[in-house]
Length: 306
Image (tube, rainbow, N blue to C red):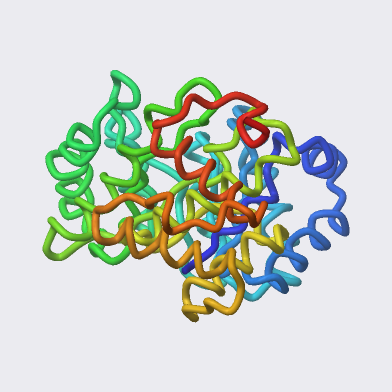
């Protein structure tokens, strides 16, 4: 599982302050920490940066590359900033992101192709995020994949993102994202790569509950064929769950249950109450979280206590 480290993100107050003040050491500490904990790519999310985008990239990319020998993902809507960032990379990078919206689809893939970069393509068009998996995959098949081929992006450099939505108000969107991944990996030949902004599923959820939602959802997505995730490598529990799945480690009750979640999802089946030791609080929490992510139990901030 490729983790694209999400932590250099302008929404984080400390990162925003570091960018404004050109605090190289703060950015480098965050870059190093993510790589040390397992990030294979670092996402540099600087926001729109309508006026200063290229200048920010001229400072940020070299600063990160001084301490992190991994590819970088240039994450901004400013096309010139994308171009500037890609031109500074020591190794082929990634562009985050395009979509089927006409203006972005016309311009962004061309820039990615020019620099031999991977590109994340969101399964959405000008009408927003489709409700169903079928609609999302249709956008990929009819628009995103043909455009990538047209501009010369190799299929292995195209990362389709079905878009995770928060369980806090949009939980009906959670199962279709899993199924969209499955359709892409099983129904397309050759299949593009897949990714997802994992932390979106727990957006606006109380902080102490976010990791559980993120890591449980990740297991389900991995079972459907997910190749990578834009996620927090500093979340030790999340990284441990990846290890459990990849090494099939059933040495703990929770680990054994997570493997059952994985296997059931891979087989297009659902977890059963008999799979769970409800006397184990950790297993009980995983069970409840799966039910929320499948949209079978309505999410509330107190769902774990119900």
